[in-house]
Image 1: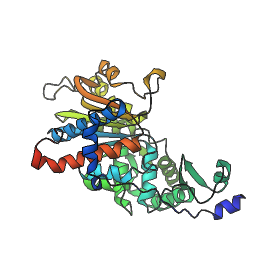
Image 2: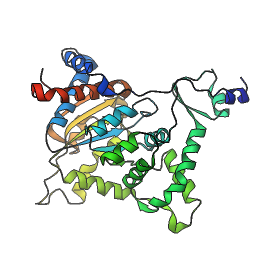
Image 3: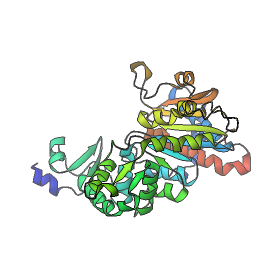
Image 4: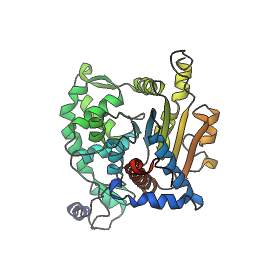
Length: 344
């Protein structure tokens, strides 16, 4: 197929559609049954139980970290329900997921396999971006940038990623993770903001305005903002999707607090690390690819409490996360009738 034919063939027929976990309450019974199995089935059941306890205990600040192509993979509405139902209080994400979410927030879509078959050179010539078995029209990235750039003067100056994402959520045209977080007051941090399409959009804006009107990302301000949240709560829990910078950045808050000499303060409770931890990953530690090490190793760094509850589920996030969220939402509905959502 010639490049021009591929270009003309961008008649994307099947958008990636994210499921709503609340529409699948049967996942609760499924995961309860998995408690009595082995391997990753039992780990997945344990993850749902820990996540339920994180949400039942008062005073727990719940952090969600996102790495990997989760928005292109169809997890947008899963994350939106987590935010709107306050299953999470803070999101730490790659810039890529926020960039893809912003595209969806401007009314565009990710697509399943197109109605043409071509190699990646043909896709390149047609300005079609591929994420494994998912496609995004590169024109939609550009249309999104052209929509956003004229509005960025409102966040000119020194800004944390939290401030930038909150503003973006308020200018989105259709529901997305960013808009749900802005509405719920859930902050979204991007610790590697410069590594994303969003950063390219910010560069494009800065290139058009004088130096005193540019946006300057305050990464160290992100660190302090997140640390302030951690030191002000009774307990903390983290649900890690993938690994990468979001995971390690969220975990390194312990040494941040220690080195800034906040945790020994008489008024502020010493932060002893996360009380709960769940990681959904396909990485393995033996090759150094766990993006921040195992939970057990993290205890040696003080990132998790010695008696913390934690589990690693070796599974594709697009499989595990919807099941965990669906089960947790179903249990929340049942709590009024049966007490704890974890118990049978």
